[in-house]
Image (tube, rainbow, N blue to C red; front, top):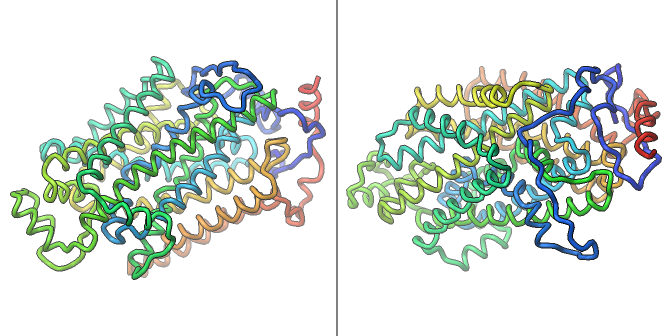
Length: 554
């Protein structure tokens, strides 16, 4: 499939199936000669070599270690402040009953990340670059804007999470806006760690994940949840006594775990290893080790999420504002006014969550909680910046200096965050967080549909294209995930109780669904629904592709 001058997508059936055909940008006629002069660059200027172990070995720890890194950077998106807030709200509202939803969402996330990694390994291009090469100009620009919106929404949660952590650690001395500025500065500093070596950068992210594990692990041990209830909630897919509140929380968990920009990020990070894509065995081996590494990374992130859910399920499930207010008053907390004296169920976010932990388990629990949130926010802010760079470079084919790219991608996401921090109270950010979750949920189809489309495209992936089971299973998973998130969006919009917003949402929905249908149409043709190819755009392989294949075979 490729873009011809008429802006349509074409599919080819390569005659040579035993080698991996490089998906070079030169295969596309709409790329100008100037654009073809040099390959698209990213921040990954260093390639990590893969050791040459005995080829007869089924598994090598040395090779696994060489491939370790991209999956852990990817897993940080599963541990950002938005996920942590979703976890604590899940525990406070539903106890242990939704742990199985968290487990299922993480497994689905792993399968989607597998597709992203395979695309990067097999083609040598990340998802944004592939979209740039294969989609016509107008859909490509719309797709870029949608993904940028998702990155901005995620980044706002992450930066504000850092600012809240700094506020808690300083006992309120650092206001929200100052915390945002501090986060901006230190993010710029940390982003240039890769100048000292890619492995050092990956080690730094590993350190931040360790800080999160120790911080939230301490809270888990300190609170001492019922282990039997934890296991029951994790493996028994049932929610007795649950109502609309718990249902919305379950939907929110799926939306928080599966993030659109993370698909783009992971497909780019896997390009950091030296892999001979013309060697089918090396590509297959890389796919195997990347999947193992991603499984380990997401298992660790799942455990950290379980720590947070279990802490709030054990300590605060069913608690009322009055109970919390009384306890905070008895311990001399200066934040008693956060909890009105009534019998309504406790409502918490990452700020109030730290306060109630301090009231019930002492100030040490509060400060350790804040350290964990700071590590989560700082690490996810950095990976979010990398996502922004990859997406902008890939979709727009930018040739700017590295500093200019970082400055632009940071500014796009930071300016809205700074405005929120200046004009919004730290105690009333839950409404904004719900809006940002809805914003990101709406962008999911713009990552999931393209990744299924291109990993199923035989002319792009060759022998590594999705089989029939992956096509059917992947399509069903993406359909379910998108449906769940659309339900979340509908629930949020209907709760606004504004006729003007209803009308605006209706017009927006028409444009939104039209573009989703366009992407689904191309995806279905690639999956085998050739009867939808009404313009016969998929019947004949382009001559330029056949010439490229002949040259490669020679």
